[in-house]
Image (cartoon, rainbow, N blue to C red; front, side, top):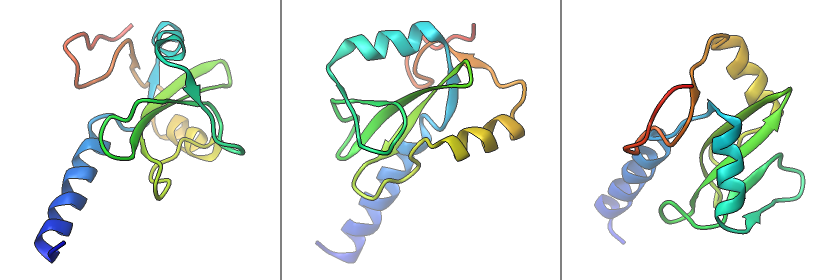
Length: 113
């Protein structure tokens, strides 16, 4: 792989991750994702992952914490952006009035609840 190829892959990966950053999601969205495919779990990591990759090693992760539901794309190979309880606390502090997504933000069914 050339340096140019590696740079392109890194930028493409970052672009995919940026399409669905850590967000609040509706309980219905969370439940729908739990039932789509068998969920995947990683010991010591909260929530579950949609077992089918979005791209390469990027999966959607969903977490229920503090009576709210969260989701986002994460990179499993290097654990880029894993949704942890610390990230959720920081997100909630920075976004106290965050919109609750009813579907993926890059999909045609995006809607706020």
